[in-house]
Image 1 (cartoon, rainbow, N blue to C red):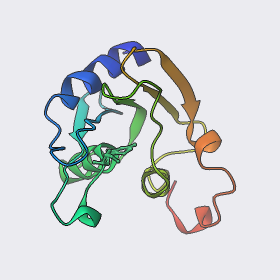
Image 2: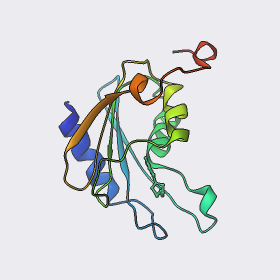
Image 3: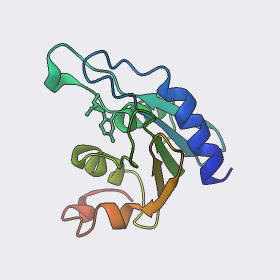
Length: 133
Ligand code: THU
């Protein structure tokens, strides 16, 4: 599965976002080592700080299903006029499970994809020696 196909799944997932406060839907699609795809959406809360981003939602769902090895991640934000990359908290959490060359692609409403990597988005990982990967 290529990044465009993975992005299309993230875009579909974004329709299921729970974002009544920001109206900013985000979908994430995680390609697992076994070829399956696990999606996630942002889930907001009226106590705003409790919001869970789409990327962490996908990752937590995958780990719950026993999947901890991944090939790629795509993030779709149809409500943005620009490509939306993972927030700082998500970068830290994603980095727990993936190597520096892990492909991460992201795009906004126009569907144009930015192709990046974990290392580009999260350089100088201070705690990498404490993680398994
Ligand atoms: N959000 C994500 O789900 N992922 C990102 O990469 C950026 C931000 C969500 C959190 C919140 O529900 C909304 O987008 C606005 O910040």
